[in-house]
Image 1 (cartoon, rainbow, N blue to C red):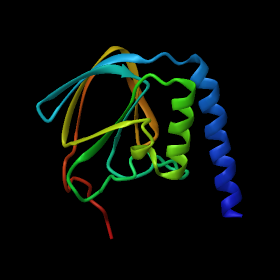
Image 2: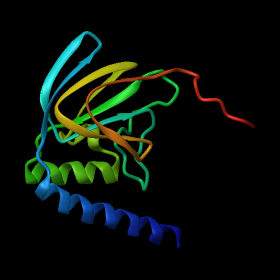
Image 3: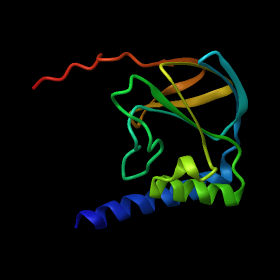
Length: 145
């Protein structure tokens, strides 16, 4: 029963991804991290402290929640063959070796975008932003036991 629910969830992701793939245009961005300046067209820009988005979609399979670093996953312009590699990489946990994404790690990242990007935190939409900073605050989450 659980596998079936997961499969339905994944098929929903696939349907939405295919629909949006045809509509979405990459956004030129600049990223500052670790004394590096990156300029690229952004299709997906994800900051991860754990391996998956949810529903077994592995955006950053090498992320380590205890290392004090965020994993930045950058996917730039997507041709159709590359989009297929990215989709398979997300599902199989092989995105870092698929050639579909570039990864960096840092605890402080500054982003400037040519147009507003939808900003989500833990899967919830927050706002659209053109300039933002993402940083990791180690041991900031208090958990009641």
